[in-house]
Amino acid sequence: MRPLCLLPLLLLGSCDPAAPPVKSLGNDEIPLVIEQLCPGDSNCPDSGDGKLYVGAAKRDITPLVEPFVDLPDKDGKYNGVHGFGEPFTDLNGNGVFDPVWIAGYGEGRQAFGVHDPNWVRCYVLKQNETTIAHCAVDVVGYFRDESQQMRADLDPKLGIDLLVMSATHVHETKDSIGIWGASATESGFDPEWMRWIRASTIAAITEAVGKLKPAKLAIASILVEDPGHDMTHYVSDTRDPVVIDNRLHLFQYDGEDGKPIVTVINWSAHPEAAGSKNRYISSDFVHYLRETVEKGTGSDVVYVSGSLGGQIGPGRVEPVTDDGKVIKDDGFPFIDAWGTSVGRFALKAFAARKEVASPKLAFRSASFNIHVENLFYHTAGILGLFKRQFFGFDKTKALVGENTPLIDTEVAYITLGPVAIITCPGELLPENFVGGYDGSYAGTWPFTKADSKGPVDLTKAPKPPYLIDLMQGEKEHRMVWGLTLDFVGYIVPRYDFILSEDAPYLNEAEGDHYEETNSVGPRAAPEIVGTMRQLIESAIPFAKPVSP
Image (cartoon, rainbow, N blue to C red; front, top):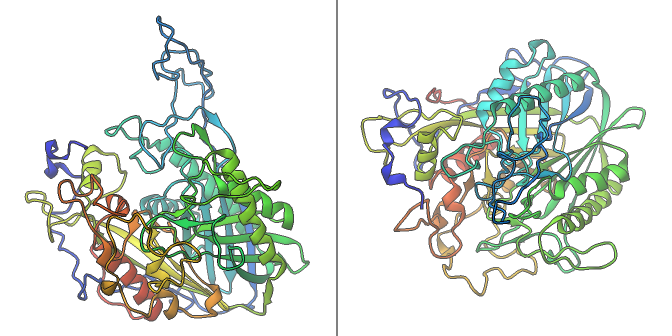
């Protein structure tokens, strides 16, 4: 247990004691504020030739891992001190050993080397006066504060109306958030590396804008499963109830000459199968998926994670290699077989893609405030592990109820012809998007695990319509871009949000309730999913949100 009770809560971050709490619409939903509407805003008219222009670029952002010689102590034992006080190669020439702490599991996981590269991959869409830059970065999460700084640093001459940053959520690279350092009280956040990611992203966007050219759009989607809705070899859910949105979405952008510009893939699974014991930098299965599709299409691939909350991923998966071997243990053979097999589904979708004639590009976005009720996150704020601002609370009072710290976050709704995309600033449990409380999204997995210790009361589950039911376009082309525009942890339906009674947020409640320990709190679903729903349904602005 972390020593939360020993920490003075009144030291939490910087704040504005006078800032009023968020007012809700009821059930903790927040009044919607449309921040941008494009085309439609005065600075975003719908004038031009109507053509869709696309450009793409990427940059390698692999962390620098300095090689070292691991020496035994005087008794011939290895004491776990790696590189500190031992011979090392000073790759950056600063005269000191610089450890790299890997994010996504527990703290203290030091990198020993690089298995495969990390990337930021960007593409830009422009139609008339509407321009969207979308970048996917191979990190566990990417805070809105980083995106806001990047927006400020972008050259206005690039004409970007909306910068959309997505994290692939890989669990095998350097800490981009701050809570996976050498120990529970030390941050793994490296400001220099984060500045380099911002600079690399801006360089990629600038290159992509310079390469804009008229493009054709083709789209496809496919269920990643074997006959009989069998997902055994591809994706599982280890939290009751089992709800998996296993549809893979593919966008293919080609020039008018038929040459590929970029392929965009959206699918839902945790990139964590290299395992918690892995000590080498990797993009996990995403690396092999991208490589498979790039070899088959001749096009660079941008991978975007979907609704992967609730441990959607490799938990019970047994991928199969090319020679028919079933892989049961995590590690690099697992992610190779897994990513390659999912990549082949993407190639099937690519072969069946259909061209969209004259697709119309539009978006609207909303910024809003959400409550941070997680006591561990309060502690991380006190210790300075998180590099973002908490605000809107009275620092002279206990941080409970309405006197709870706020953060600002953001969602966007993007449409492109028959395609509709709603972004989510965290790890959305799929039932928030598709429902599935009737077992229709479980495939051949048991809807409720036989060993479940905390059965879910489905009579209290949200009723339809769900987000996917409210969206525009063709249903097989409606999707979530998860961990996009922010990173706020798991978004658990409120009826199923259960905390440990003895140590809330620090220990799990009995049953399948790990996700609660890494969520901002029970109001996350109504505040975030409620805003996503309102953004889909409405374009009417209400009052402005609280500012930090």
